[in-house]
Amino acid sequence: MTILRRLAIFFALLLLGALAVRLGLLPVAGAMAGVLGLNVLAFLPWRGAWRALAAVLGLGSAAWLGMMALRIHERLDLGRPWLRLALILGTVAAFTAWTAWLAWRTEAATRSGTDA
Image (tube, rainbow, N blue to C red; front, top):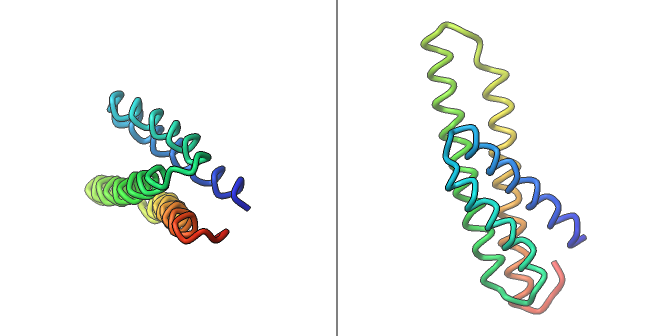
């Protein structure tokens, strides 16, 4: 189960890196590459890696929601359809929030010594 958790977190971080590249924030994209390294470090028994991953993914979910609001307003101003965009970006934001919860839950299980 842990490997599936790590794959989901890895994919969410890749999506956040793609968002940063799309926005032209190359230093942020580089930071996402560093956070991907944290995902590898999470194999070590360092609890702080899971906390850091949960925090980054939580902020990433908020970034996706902000992007969704920005794009919806743009589409409304242009008189173009926006529902499909909202569904796609809302799903990505929800997926990223779910992976943040997974990382937080894994950190809590590591702290208590149980397998989550």
